[in-house]
Length: 306
Image (tube, rainbow, N blue to C red):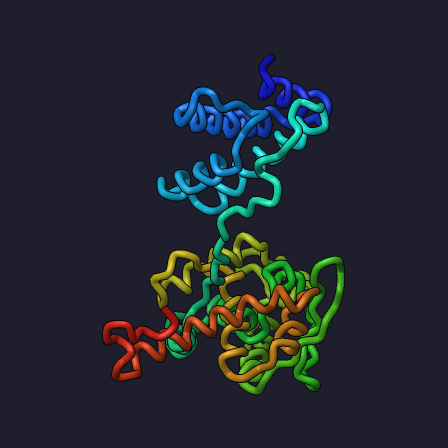
């Protein structure tokens, strides 16, 4: 009897898993089977020592597999043993309570403040409507931290020039109010004057940001492309997107002593834990600053944070 085939049939016909998913499960289990048979041909599924599973994890990590891929293969093995236990084919699970390798959280990519200063203080932007609009879009992302979908959805009615705030419609149509400062307000007034003059040639539109070709609302793809083009002028990092500017906003706020709860509200996060990832970013900056500034930071054994 082939227990792996029985398990795959169970996933395919009883759980309705896709062919791609079942193929992945089968590949993981066959890989483990080859591993333990190479160690001891007398070992079988029913009498599997937990130590063999640990050795498999170590070998996969030594071969350069990511923690994510190793955890996925362990998950396949864990599901397989749950199936065998339910069928009464084994009486113990060697994977039970065995933790996988820790997956390191990826720090969010962001643009440094000096690079953002260079962007806005440069002559990258033309003196026509398109130039004013592009600069205003980038400044809106950087000054408010709003999402791409939130920016393209902005209408004139969402702007309160007197109260200096924007009304943003986020996920699940949840609205929030975002205040802005004097520089943003001055730039916004200048932009609106240019936009109104430009929009006279088209039928009235309620959109805050208009396409320079047809006067219609900007599409997410067009905004994404212009953000990438301008950011590539000031930074060499690979990821240059509206979401990177959202990360940049949050990082800048925390670096200038904003409290985490306030940043959470401005970003429209449901949970504070979602916002906490930016504290890791600012701590990385702290380590870098220390290593650059302290006279003994680079001496042997004196590298802060390592």
